[in-house]
Image (tube, helix red, strand yellow):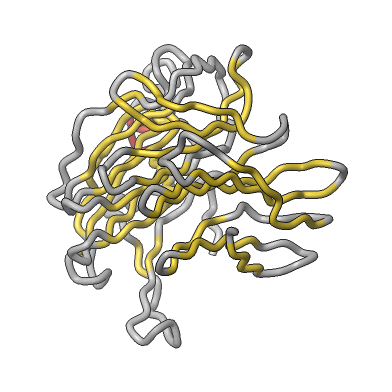
Length: 285
């Protein structure tokens, strides 16, 4: 049901306890019920079964009089459920000054925390990425800068990152930038103060990708637009992200969604939806 004011919304949650045959009535996750921006939600479940939901929220901008000079961008808030989504507690703030419409990546970690990655608005208008660690008690750690293209823009590119971790805990990410000296869709291994093994993927039209890690095998998938068709491309490294081989998995005419990676045992699959070939599940070679 649309809300009366433009660019407003609620984050609603529904669960199934019978394998997807039936779902509960949707419930609003956040306590703030003003008709403002609560949008671009994402979800992760940690090993203890606690459900984390994070979203982009403009309550702090509204409280600042909707003055972008008083408050840059929006904020990331999150809520946590201890009972498989029956109830949520929050709202907990994860970060101030985030890009208004770039989706958040959430990654559940072995220690029960969840790492969030998003496009941040570093002062005054640098829209690179940041990470923070979220805990089930509602606390958020220190914000860490994750990418360093120095993209200065007073607008939101609607292009969020993706995040995965290997067995050693090292973070692997993909992201987009249109900075003048560093433009494109990128992969890299995140570390404090920098990025290792950063490489540009695809053509000038590449983007909206995903990344997964299984052991030492890193898989990146993205959508590119070449020769009048949307193409599903992948790059695979069996050595933790040092040596890569690229291949094309599919191509379609007309509209297509963003690809997402699925891990089943030791096999990796891509889920990709398009008008020409709906709901494809494609194994990664």
